Image (cartoon, rainbow, N blue to C red; front, side, top):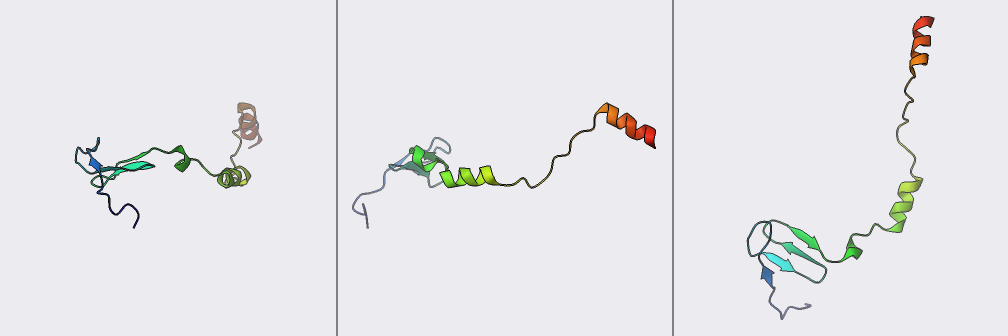
Length: 79
């Protein structure tokens, strides 16, 4: 097991104040309240395939155009 010979290092959590904040090289998390801090921006980057999929997605609903006052009056006079 990797780093099994090292004891885990816990710090005080800024959210709950307990001593359960474990700091790793990529992120830190609290075992008591699940508070999480990400140190690496690579974990937050949206992959290019996801951006491409969102750009090519078809809209699910059609937004109707609002009627102008002239069209509304013409429809009322036709009835």
